Amino acid sequence: MTARSGPPDGGGGPGGVRVTIPRVVIAGTHSGCGKTTVARGIMEALVARGYTVQPFKVGPDFIDPTHHSAVCGRVSRNLDPFMMGEDGVRETFARACRGADIAVIEGVMGMFDGLDGTDCASTAHVSRILSSPCILVADVHGMSRSVHALLLGYATFDPAVRVAGVIFNRVGSDRHRTIISSGLQVTSLGYIPRHPGLRVESRHLGLWMAHETGSDGTWGRIIEEHCDIGGIVRVAGDAPPIPIAGPVERHFPPPSVRIGVAMDPAFCFYYQENLDLLRAAGADLVFFSPLNDPLPPVDAVYLGGGYPELHAEALSRAACTAALRKAASDGMPVLGECGGLLYLCESLGVERTFPMAGILPATAEMTGKLQALDYVSGMWSGGPPLAPSGSPLRGHEFHYSAVSCGSDARFALRLSRGRGISGGMDGLFEHGSVGTYAHSSFSPAFAGSFVRAARDWQRA
Image 1 (cartoon, one colour):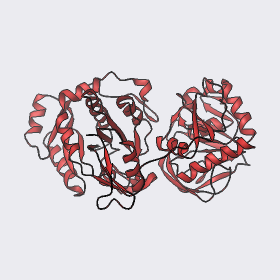
Image 2: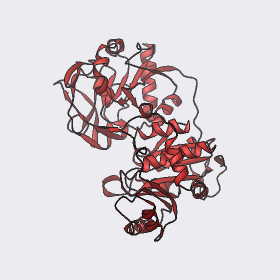
Image 3: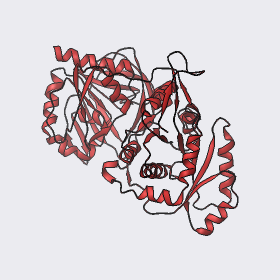
Image 4: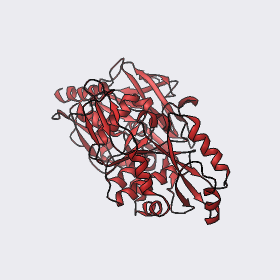
């Protein structure tokens, strides 16, 4: 059942392919219904049966994909039509599925919940783009026959979306299951009882990361016991071929620069597509820990989001912090996103104030309440060489911190959507460094500009 691609067959377009792979979207009636635990359990059960599973996550989430990747042994990819466009979703899906037997796509929020009250970037939207059947997860705690009215609405709301089955979650008893099963109008693929092991601890930015929770296969065993895995595989196998108009192959040339990528408990939020685009533009990615490692010999640095506030004291003492300050003052390109932005500031307040890298003229403070949660879009308007002036940006912001800028602050990003650092401005910059609250989805042009900036600094 390995993913296949071949010459276009009506609708593939010039140079396109048609991708055939069994696939299924795990959708939810609402946030908190259990789709994350069910999706992960299905992945575990399939892997235990010997399938090579390619995982995906709808939307801009960084945390759920870490759990997918740990279970499947393959990097989970984000699929987000707002940030990537519909063609980008199809092309990313096709590339990632090479060598897989089946794809499992975890949805986001409620099935039809999208941008500004539309279904743009919703689970249903991605299901349509990929012509993928959906399995709906319904939390039936406190419900019995009423759930069928709910499911009938989901199954008929959008005729272009196929709800192929339902998994009932948090079933209270055998009697509860019997009552529910007597009125089925959508094919049942499982009845999962209330189970204390089917949850992941969470904090202010979402669930704990995979490396913090581990996996002992419990979820897979529970899903295997209470769900119809064979039926789920049959649903996935009914998905039709997907025509892909653009190129699927991505070529990685011999690297010409080294870009350091911070990867540790403080900095761990990255889109895999961004890293791949940097490699495709000619970068050798050098992963390092600002908490524990010296700054490696690199030509630029990429600091993703994460939890610097949980490690502020250690970061303030780390040898890497002073070395990064010196390299940035010499003009080395540095990009910091969200948590990376906080690290580039002069200080970070978390109960008490800790000195940070001091590269950007600003101070940061954790506020204890949500400051921004939304998609962002804007235009790079000049600044450091790594940011190509006039090119668009799309991304996402989600943070509980605030940044106060000095009077001489300069911004390289003007947002048409989103809050940014201050008044719709983002991309605070100094020397060759820039910090954004936006977690951006890189374009090939941006990745190329980042690599060129590293190369120019290398030569200088």
